[in-house]
Image (cartoon, rainbow, N blue to C red; front, side, top):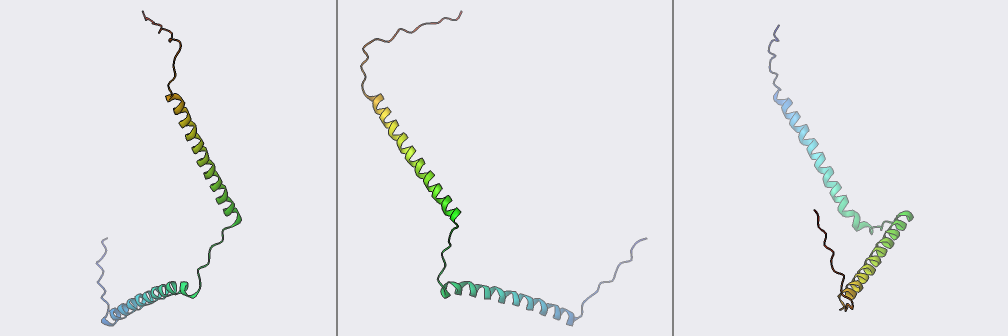
Length: 110
């Protein structure tokens, strides 16, 4: 059996006006709330000085340890660079060979 088509239901003029008025009212309320939040946000720094955040002792200790590790890495990098420079300077210095190198051995693959 086929369903009979349902009739379209139209709203009265007064119902549509009430609906539009309620929608406008809710939008206006939302707009007022956002405006109030904006005003509160801009006024709060003026009323009092911003408080500095205090880190917990564990976080301060963690920061100190990280700083120590970073300084150790930097110091190690610096010493490695100095050792490399010394090694390069020693290698580039003219070294006189008193003995001739051994002759190369030839290998034949047969």
